[in-house]
Length: 120
Ligand SMILES: C[S@@+](CC[C@H](N)C(=O)[O-])C[C@H]1O[C@@H](n2cnc3c(N)ncnc32)[C@H](O)[C@@H]1O
Image (cartoon, rainbow, N blue to C red):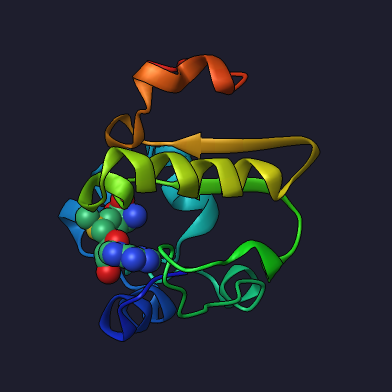
């Protein structure tokens, strides 16, 4: 989900240049999930649903998720808004669900409100 149609169009196209594809994706995974020119395979792309969502509005009705990935998005918001968004995402998780956030999503001062694990 994203607020920007441009960002969503880029995601829908699932095309990545060499720099982008090598940024954090191992060679075996590149071969497992991408075709030669790094276009995400249709069998995976067709399983992805893209939506325009403004995270500063109520998005809690989107449903329940096993996994929510949120990286470098809440960096734009106030600490309070960041906390609100991450709290909402946490409530949208299934019982064993995981919210995976980037370093910029940190809410260190209220970390105790979440059950957290840090990855290097
Ligand atoms: C720095 S990019 C990060 C993109 C991607 N998550 C990544 O890590 O490569 C930030 C993204 O957040 C989106 N964004 C900004 N404000 C938003 C909002 N209020 N609701 C949803 N998405 C937003 C922007 O359109 C942009 O695509």
